[in-house]
Length: 150
Image: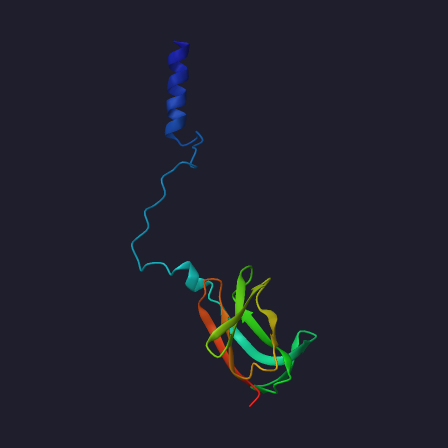
């Protein structure tokens, strides 16, 4: 008889909501179909805010920028400021005419971020040059044309 009384009391208490319920395994509501979510790559778009070719960099700022350099320039620098690339890498890909002559991988530590690479320019490598700023996937974000000599 004591057992039956305990069972009845428990049943009454459970019916009144006094018993604790574990809701950690409760089924989640089914979301209503809406527009497809945006791809993750679009959310982390890399943009080149500024980019120049210069003779040097001093205190993280480009010096003597331009689009034409003398044949004895010795070296040029591609300086860029980017946003949205924190924790990834960029590439400065250098071209003399249509021939690729350098590919410098640059690690990006935050956003916005300033970074640069240098390219030695032999005195007899005159003519058209360009440098492409590419994201980690190889997409060209910016192209800067310049001339050495002539």
